[in-house]
Amino acid sequence: MATSSQPVPVSKTMVWAGRGISALCVLFLVFDGVAKLFMPPPVVEACAKLGIPEHIVPDIGVLLLACTVVYALPPTSVLGAILLTGYLGGAVATHVRVEDSAFPVAFGAIFGVLVWVGLFLREPRLRVLIPFRRAAA
Image 1 (cartoon, rainbow, N blue to C red):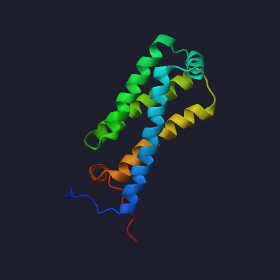
Image 2 (image 1 turned 180 degrees about the horizontal axis):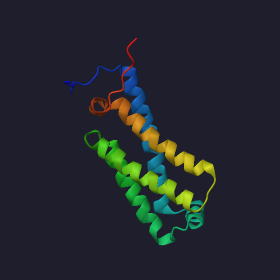
Image 3 (image 1 turned 135 degrees about the vertical axis):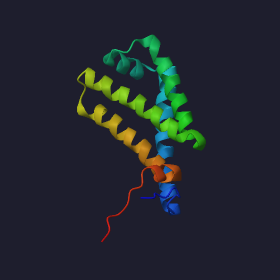
Image 4 (image 1 turned 60 degrees about the horizontal axis):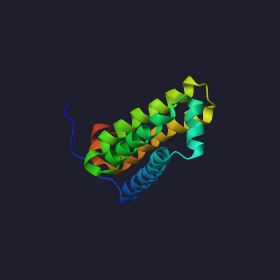
């Protein structure tokens, strides 16, 4: 059985929706990364609650910003999504470890899904690798 490696034509609306979702993700992640660099009291308190030593917080911010930049650049966006998935998975695991409420756990997981949804909608190479098709009538 031969498979096609040609991208499926996609509407401009779908591409722009993907760009919008990705842009919102990038904006939030940049905000979060910068907050970890400047360490305002709410960030320090949240990290202390999670058991993260204060001196590591800026390093986590730099890591997040680097992963976000890799995601935001079109040639490296797939690698960036993989890196952000690992980062967000670690965040989810940290919240589960301290038995935090369901919201931070779900937020991290849903945010990871949004990173991939935005990329899937705007990246034709990804749609070739993961071809969602409608069932034949």
